[in-house]
Length: 213
Image (cartoon, rainbow, N blue to C red; front, side, top):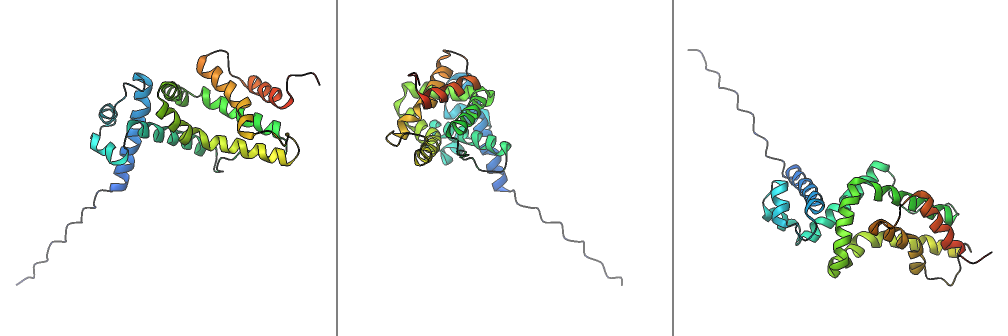
């Protein structure tokens, strides 16, 4: 009697990759949050709206974040990290060529490029505008989004002090505002165009003052 060969076992089905699924959902939530805050503004952006736009349940969002502010700021931070990855493999650092004026001008020029980038401009404006009237959000924006950059400015100015390029008695935290605050005001309030020429002039005025030399 011929021996019957048993049928080969069916290939095992691979389990869904939960890591890939979670990352896909996270990216969809980031995109939804940024697009909604641009279209509807911060006050009208809701967790429910973000979930619907992203195609996930709102419980998914609450599992990862406690509020819409947390979602939006993480989405914006991720957008910044994407931009850095596109710029090159080196982590972002404030340049120190020994010429503090050239270094600050270079960073401000990069800031101008970012403020002009449509991916950043609309969500930046929406979050910044809400931060003016919502003190808690404003403080969170400074702590999570701005403070790391401010720290780099202060570190570079302290190095310039050590090199004798900047007065030893200045407060770096106040001094950096001569560079970034006028740019932020002009950009937010549309009081004038922002350009490399403008930010270069800010640096010259800040470092050399207004009095005749």
